Image (cartoon, rainbow, N blue to C red; front, side, top):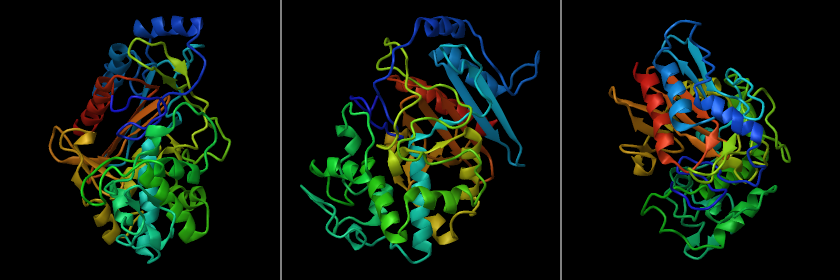
Length: 388
C-alpha cells in the first residue's frame, strides 16, 4: 500500500479507514458463501460460457475475496455491457445491483479539472497564472507561497503542496474545504513548485476553491451544469453537505485494515473531506460515458483538451503511467494507451477509462484494503476489456 494511516487517499485517490461496525456473523456466513463461488453474472445468459470480462470479475471475487465487482464496457459502436459478480450485501446475501452506484473517489479530480479547463477556455482562468491571482494571500506556509504556484501545477500535481489526507487521522465528520487546506498548510512543502511530481489531494481542494471564487457558485452546481447535465450522466451526483448515504441501488462498501482483518461496512459515511478531490458518486456506465465524451471533445475545446492530455511521467500509477491535467494515461497490453484516473475511498475501488477510438471500460469493487495486488488485478480486467 502507498499509505500507512486510516482515511487517506491512495495514489489513485481515495479514502481509507472509517469507524464503522464490524462484520457481523451473518456477513461471515455470506463471505463463506461468496468464497465457494456464489456469483451473480449479469451479462452472460444462463448456461452460456462467460466472456472474458465476466470471467475477470468472477475471478476478482473468487481469488481476491472481494465481496462484489461491477463492470461496464462500452464498445466502439456505442453498445454498453454491464457485469456483476459476488454479493451486494454481506449481511443479507442480496444480489449486486446491475450498474449500481458507488463512491468513485479520485475520479472526481477529472471532473474538477474539466471545469477548470472550461473556465480557461472562457478566459476566466489562466493555466499559468498564480494561485494568488484568484485566492490572494490564502496559500502560505513553510516553503509554500501561492504567488509561486500556478493553476497548471495544481492540476498536474507539480505544486509541491503537502497532502492533507496524510494528516486527517480518524476524525469522521463534516469538513469545510478551507479546513482541509488549513490542515495541509500546517506542514512544510514537499518540494519547490515545478521541480518534481507528487500526488497531493490538496491541489484539487485549491482547484475547487478557485472554481468557486471565479464563478461565484458552489463547486457542486458547476459540475452539475457543466458536465453531469451537459452529457446526460443520469446516475452521477455530488453529495450535499451532511448526506452520508448513496441515493440509488448500490452494493454495500467495505474496508479491510489489513489482509487478515475482518471486513467492515463503511457504506454510509460523510465524504466531505474528499470534496473536489474525491466526493462524487456515480456508476461504471456513467464513467464510461464521461471518459468517452471527454476524449471525443464534447466537454472541452480542442486547445484545452490538448493541455489536459499533455503529460509527465507518473510511475506512482504504475509502469508507463503518465499524468496530464487531472487525466492519467496508462499503456495497454494490446498497444496504445487508455485515459482515465481511478479512485479509492473506504468501501470502493474504481479503475478504468477510455481509448481515443471510443472504447471504454470501468470496474468497481466493494472493498478497500491493504493489498495492492488486488487493485492490480482490477486494472488487469480493465486491460482485458479494452483489448479483447
